[in-house]
Image (tube, rainbow, N blue to C red; front, side, top):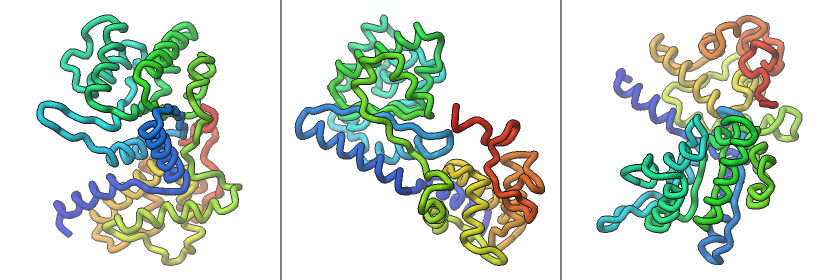
Length: 312
């Protein structure tokens, strides 16, 4: 395989998304919400949470791709609108991001009330049937409680005005946004979590194996099972990625490049051990999941790559 072919294969691998159990359930729930709105006019909203790297953005994009934009005469139809909430999650910043995604030529123009009115008009003009806000925790992260309440109150106003399902994606602390404004909380169903699961769950190992196995066909250089069982490899990969699809793809992408540069015909434990140090420089010896000295525990202590993420 020459360099061009390899980079094309690497890009194709990076674009892969994995339809594991929780992923499929959330997609199905979003389809159900959209179908309900289309056929009855009843609007249900959804909150989806998950740790960084668990695949939230991939899921949002995968759903949007099911309903692609269409150009009719001089009009653009956007059935599902996906907007990434900017890190400056103020009312104005969020309103401008939505307007920009809708094709408004002057998203910064006007007061917030004017921008909100334009969002409503453009959503109806574009025949948008669902609004997805990714990285929505930035709304909560911005400022003090007074500012958070103002932004949450504006979001409630927007949800009421556009009369279509709204889906919020974010890390677990996004749930705090709904605690800031009781009226907003009433407009969203119980949160759904995007997660492969916990090590103590029944079937957890099988789920992780299924995720790895689903990505295997997209690997231009295969994973080696020499001198290791599938169960042991799955456990080691879990600890190296904390069960997050984003980290898994990053680990395998680094390993793929190393294997290709070394003219290897497979990715083995040595390749993965070295690749992990590119994710965490201090991950060596007993703290490297692919080392023979590994201690088989989550790397979530102070200074380790997954420290504090579960309670963030």
